[in-house]
Amino acid sequence: MLTVIPIARGVEREVLSYFTTRAITPGMVVAIPLRSRIVPALVLDAENVEDAKADIRDRSLIRDLDRA
Image 1: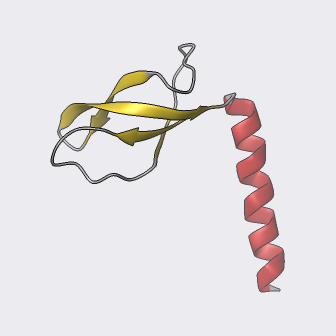
Image 2: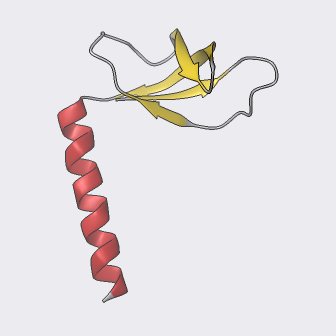
């Protein structure tokens, strides 16, 4: 899973997440689909999908326990 920030004019600078099968490293510039166009984005973090899925599961469990 990639964490990126779009670096195109007229695009809000927000942190986004994308999945890819390619070997991408932090610091690379990649092309991402955003709304109806393809824009460049700076990769902030690249993480194994399995690790990311486990982290997401753990976070949702913690939130559910906090509400109880």
